[in-house]
Image (cartoon, rainbow, N blue to C red; front, side, top):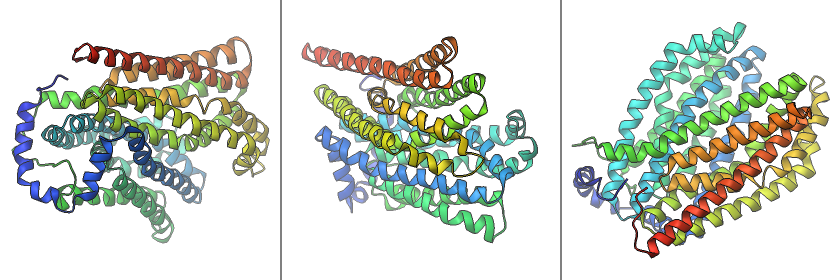
Length: 488
């Protein structure tokens, strides 16, 4: 979006923001430090902004494991019911996080350009987006939950799945709002409060689950209410920060709000492609599972499912760094500090490579011990050798995730959502699945061939993404040296 297109909306938000100027400055030391960090030395910004995100995401990952344990105590039917609902609700989370990436990118670019009124306008439009998306998602999920779950094969667990699903689906607005509020905070360089809120929500949920499930006797519905109550708590804290305490850098005021198409376009040009990327992950998983089932049966699917949970936890630091990179790159792009973009992209990638290499060493050495956590029962013990072999194969996967994910996040920060979408589609849907198909099915290497197809597809896709980002940054620097203002 070109400079000056936000003038009408920023004037309105600027007037509202001026009324709150005194409140914004009062007790605003941490927020000022956050913005200063965002627009300051890029390596320091990425390192310090990603730290709190790593802690928050690790706590969430730990909660997910604890939640599964509590639900498992209700029996296999309850566990299956939650298992059927979870992928559907993950669509809500994926859309929310994707749109949140658009909000963070748009706000950070305004912060970098010194356009506070534009950042305020973006935040106000994000609130409107929360309402619109929440209404659509809630109505669709509540009305279509039964048919969707039946089509997924819920069978005897359908009633329990609906009992759980209808509660969490009704709380969709809380999930969407929380994601947007977190995105606003990240966009202004404040990840510490994001960490506090995410950690508090996870801990509250972990405490509420056994109380509501067992002590209150609500069963699977108790797990659903625990999730909704924790999201409500987080949302109330966020509302307090933004509308009562008013100590965020971005001032949000809906008084005199006037919709601006260009502001919403600026959010959605990153938000929509980022949301679609989350769907690609699900599509990729479905295809891989189908191939594994075809060549080696359900045991191969079980190994991949368990192994991928380990991979996801191991990738949390990289996801946190990539999330921080969106805001830092956005601020540099908005300020037209294109030389800093090269530093941001290279440092994020190198940091991710180092973490990925360390992860590969740890998982390679301790694969048998990690496997033992998931194969201790008599029914699952026979999976241990295959699971160890899978984790050893994935040792080459971890280091090469970084060039791909950091390059895609760079483009999101720069407002190039379609480029990020294309690169992720190339890596996840085309190269990974194609190589897995060729090695596993065409060449007849079975499940091991599919594993190596995932590894080689990730390597090739990540290298393409990295080179694409480097070429784009070099072009920006060259054009700036020639006095050319790029608007693509």
